[in-house]
Image 1 (cartoon, rainbow, N blue to C red):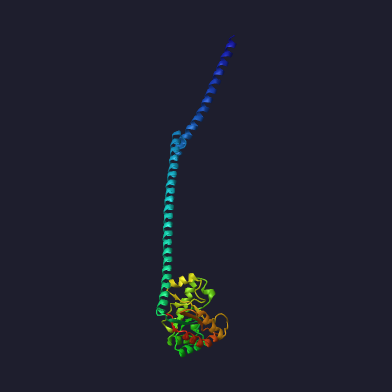
Image 2 (cartoon, one colour):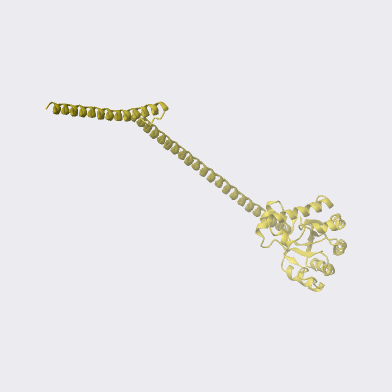
Length: 324
């Protein structure tokens, strides 16, 4: 009986000790977890990571939201600036465009005014020439001077006491400077017929045409000094060359075409009789004649026909003058 009681006491003690050991073990585990968690929070806080504690997380969220809003506001400002700059650029473009349109309109108006002045000048010249019903003939020779043909023509004009207008090619003048000086010394008018007379070159653009005129002008000036350099004739005539006519007018030139001719450019060689007949045909019924002939190389039949052409015109009552 006594033993049984002792056993029960021992069992009870043992259970108590086991319970105590388990309690201690559980407490130790819980304490260890709690300590680690607290230590991590403390360490993180001391290390500066604001996202650990609940309070710091809230503050961080607030800061992040503020940063985002600031960026949005900044983006809007930049967008507004871009839109404003775009508006200014568009306004500036429109202003430049408007100014260019005004300049273009003014330029066209100037061209038209110059054209009207030119036409008025021509009409007044014709009116003055024919104010008393006079019949006027202007003998003009293109494409010289040439060493063989030009001297013969000058001899005939001198014999008949008639002055003519020579539309000289700059390159030909450079080759025959003595003949150019003779033309001027004998009272004839010298005018500009370009430097090269190269259709492909001069009619490729208005600027090329003007430059070729200036080059020819410079060559002639270097030989005879001052002359009527602004009086010109288009190679092949100005007919249908509106842009070129406007260009030369704006550059200060005065161009003259023809309304009668002897036809010496219609073939490499034209018989004398045909030249005289062609002159009569094209001159018929006109009071003022601008007669086209050539003193270029090879125009021997022009030399042969000239005396009879002069006599025919005199018989028709024409007075001979030079272009100005």
